[in-house]
Length: 268
Image (spheres, rainbow, N blue to C red):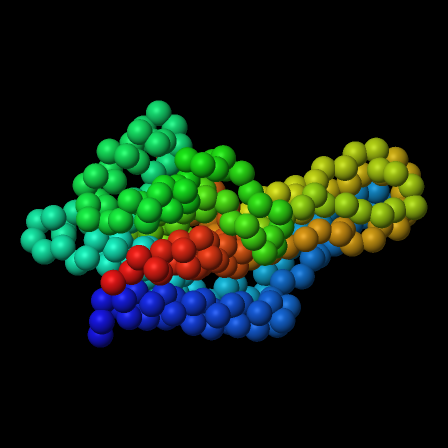
């Protein structure tokens, strides 16, 4: 296999694997694997809403995600090696696609320093394209509009790099996430309403609880948007929750549109 074909074949495999995984996710969600239970006290003055997960996401999904993430990261490193002309020996061992984050230990000065070592032999114009997609051009922790088709912000590469590194030690946890605020409709307003939107959900997790001053109030089931999410270890022992399908799609989209496409003329 030619050097250029190796890069394209690895990326094509990654896309095909992602498409197959998205099909599994759709089938799983179509099976309606969860429901919302309503618990009411005897006087019907207090309502508690809980999620019941009848079927958890398949156990093999974290390994599928690992394959997608690692092959996508490897596609970038294979690309850098190709752009450098497949240099031999020790110089070739240092060639990789740099991903530089914002902050005191990142930014353009760090990229320029790293590029001299990791992108040695790469055409200056190609280095300029790689610099243009670095995460320090985006805001860490920001999020594009829900199900945005693009453009994909550069910080997505930070997520890709972090997931690739973390997965060597700990697998991501997959489950449901209450993506939006919980809302209810009732005949009279409650005197107390506690919403638990915006959190990772386990079986029997309380979504919301409301209390009324008078008995026998009729309350509809709460409106809430659930989505499958990744819960991955983040920096300093904290966890970060990411929309499952969206982030994988954004990663692949960014690599294809903003990295592979403009760099193909420089590939060997």
